[in-house]
Length: 469
Ligand SMILES: [Zn+2]
Image (cartoon, rainbow, N blue to C red; front, top):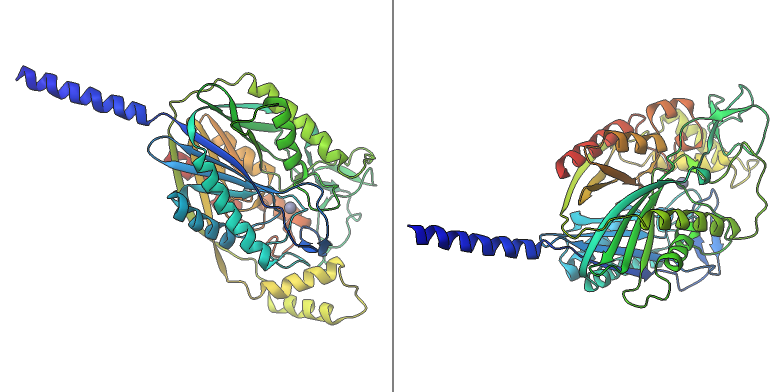
């Protein structure tokens, strides 16, 4: 009998050793170029379409694949403003074919640069079909290349605050000073981007999240491999042509700070968009900054990259980490226009005395388009645990207070939220912010979820975090 017990424990030990061997983390990263090749090309992000003919700096799909021996996850951050779910689902399927990675384990998000080709209809811009196909294929290719780069790795996490680059852009203003909304109502109590030092500014209508989250990946022998950062800043703006905004400039600056001269592996810096639906880089309490093209982008990128370097130097890296993923689909109601609203919109569209490109005309067009939307839309939520850090992924432009609530209530030690992830379902204000009104609540393809949408979405993310815990 004793020999049997000994035999069993030896076999058990061998299995244990194999399991330990297998559980050692591997990681691979790749920055896939997705700069458009043909011009002029439509760029969205504004009320009217822009046709751009030149490139200020290249666009990328920055890919990171992690493997804990049992499963692989892929994290992809794409230099684009708004990416619809269809494109992302298609890219995930194509990536699955070449890599075997389950689409549920892939998180794709958009940075929200306002200087990238249009891949979905928004205000005056339509999707560029050629670029949709190009981007879909390149995202899948990028994931495959990151997977090819898998190498034994170690990982660590840290956070640091940078409160001076984030400002809530929604301002409460004295009664009577806020212009009518595009539907002719004067019920807004807040104004987005009201202007610098204008009359009657009271206070910002919500908080900001100053925290930068930093997920650092090194090779087993300590060479920097990739950093996935997260910061709640909408974008900076200021480059006239195709540009990755501060997200690209951050990646370049971080590379100079952390991996200068390093040829192999090529270090990949990644900045994902946190919960920044109501947060930008402009301080309306002070006068405007005088900046040349791209100057503010470089300044913000430098400040944020230096902060990341500061926390990176203190991060302790480990290789015995595990991964977990959970996803959930929600059905949410659409705020569809009623008959009277559609009639009013049609009259505005037919009225030649109202100029094209004005907010009245732009929102009249949106109203007409929204009447054909379904009564409910399906929306995907995802949580990914990497060691004791979790990422919540929401397909919206999420308000800062929602991200702060998720961070606070998360059952995990460290959590951050990536916005504009796995699809695009418009702005996500809280019901209280909806009541205040303002641009982010105006019904359009950029804001159409039911008023209470943030409640099931927040609850859904917390439920998924509990599952991956
Ligand atoms: Zn936006």
